[in-house]
Amino acid sequence: MNRVVKNGVVLAVALLAAGVAQARNDEYQRLLDRFNAVATDPRLADHAQGAMDRARQSLAALKEARRGDRDAWAYVTERRIDAAQAVAEAELLETRRAQLQRENDKLQVAVAKRDAEQARAELERERLQAQIRAEEADAARRDAEVARAEGEQAQQAAQAARAEADQAKRMAAAQAKAAALARKEAELEAAVNGKPAKPAAKAAKTPAKTVKKKPAGH
Image (cartoon, rainbow, N blue to C red; front, side):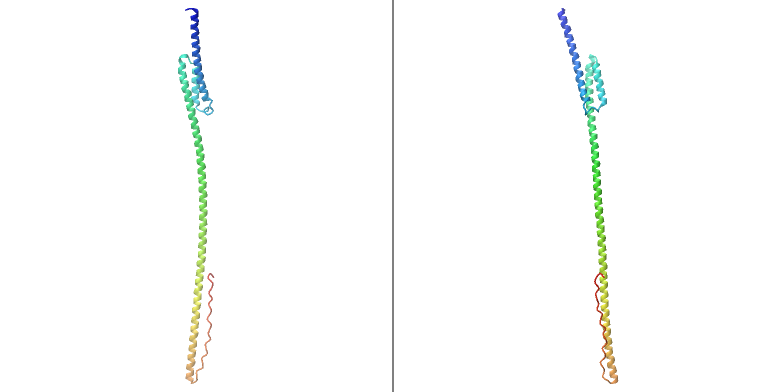
């Protein structure tokens, strides 16, 4: 092999080695960039710390791996980065779900408090309405009792007036009877003495009492 050919082969080998090395570096850099994108995402940075550490360890192993192990470590590293991202996103969703649940719980408590306050207010209104109805019923009963008492007083006054009227009638009848007996007695005495009978003095009539009706309610 002449020197020119030999130098060409050496150069080709060197270029191939350089290309392989560059490809390895490019693969490492690609995975490193992917990892940094997940690790520096402000939404995911505080999640999946264990998975992030495993992906970071795989990157370090990939960087130091021998040629025969690099493909395996590249595969493992990419899968661990995928896992770290998935776990971080799942934890983020769980954190948001828990936050929404807390907000929902607070809302439910607020609604329950509002409903309880409305129920207490409604109960108080019903209590006041019941109290008003009870007071109105008491007032109606008192009015009915007063009206009944006035009716009884009016009935008693009417009965007293009728009793007085009956008594006045009896007195007038008794006076008429006394006057008739006096006339009869005078006629008999005149007949016995042979003298004409003098007109019997009329019995003084006692005027019947005028019954004044008492006003109802007194």
